[in-house]
Amino acid sequence: MLTVINDDGSTRDGSLLDDIVREGARRMLATALEAEVNAYVAEFADERDESGRRLVVRNGHHQPRKVTTTAGAIEVKAPRVNDKRTDPDTGQRKRFSSTILPPWARKSPKIGEVLPLLYLHGLSSGDFVPALEQFLGTSAGLSPATVTRLTAQWPADHTAFQDRDLSATDYVYVWADGVHLRVRLDQAKACVLVLIGVRADGTKELIALDDGYRESGETLAGLLRDCARRGMRAPVLAVGDGALGFWKALAEVFPDTREQRCWVHKTANVLDALPKSAQPAAKRAIADIYNAEDKEYARVAVQAFAAQYGAKYPKVVKRLSDDEEELLAFFDFPAEHWIHLRTTNPIESTFATVRLRTRVAKGAGSRAAALGMVFKLIESAQARWRGVNAPHLVALVRAGAHFERGVLVERQDRAA
Image 1 (tube, rainbow, N blue to C red):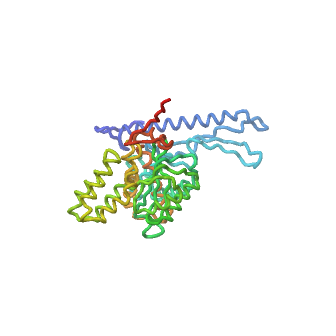
Image 2 (cartoon, rainbow, N blue to C red):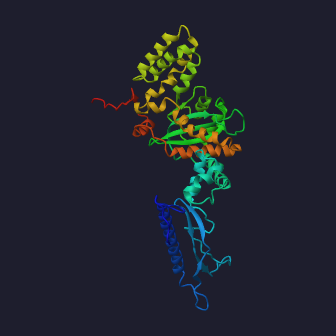
Image 3 (cartoon, one colour):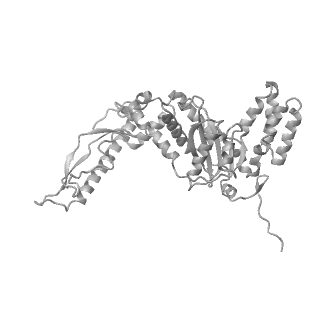
């Protein structure tokens, strides 16, 4: 077929390069379909009726149809098969169904995956047709109704995730936080409760996600009890906000797990009680504590903070000193892990993407739909999460290895 090519290399339907890609994809698909049908017919070539005629034969082609693929819209004429065999149990006629191109397919599975992901990352359902029509060469299968149908599976995916077995996975570190989003939950002040863990190989993974209240120990206890019921082992260290009811729940469900208060939340809590003029210097003094060389230097920095602000602001110093042990717990672990363990940033950074999508969506409908959307957002982001530094040390932490000043202490053999 002749095609008019403009000076800039474009054609009537787009660019010459796109046309070549689509034509190559069309020919490859046609060849694959022909090979699939030929193999099916050859497999049953020996099955014949009483007159000696074959029961499975070729029967022309179906009507042409367009299929949307990542290479664009491709017109396909699928070969047809006349299968006269019957099922001996049911008596129904057997039918050939292509595994490459099912009869109902109008777009490739990859397009079905891309559409909800684009919706997750901020593209409004009404913008799909103008945004993607130029790329794919057709608007078929890009309607808002299509997106709605694809996203309807998310609540079920979230429910299956919350019911999965946890006994085969060992989470050594755990972060917990409650994040407020503009999504429709059961109560106005409810938030999304999140647990993220570090596996023994150093990779991060979402453990659980549900709605509840940050201040409610019972809500978080229920989430932890559910994880324990599904086989979750007690983590070595848990990181969370000091105001979170998580600690009461943790002591009840996993009493052997050590506590680490988040320095970001604690810094904000301390600075809020100081006048603005004193906040910059106080913030630097607090940073000297969690950036100290080891726990001993950190304790010296805590005493320096108390000496500097204790006379004027004793309640501020008390906010820091009351949680000193929990704030400095991360110093007892590998130095490579300190940057990960002293804050709940793994959760905060993940929810930056979630907040973007929820602002665009302006409400996700029901509670189940809202949680399903948040779950899918985190599931999508999880593939890009960076593991902890020195991942080989995570297994040693689980094994009970001892670290001093962030360095592994080798066992010394006693002299004879």
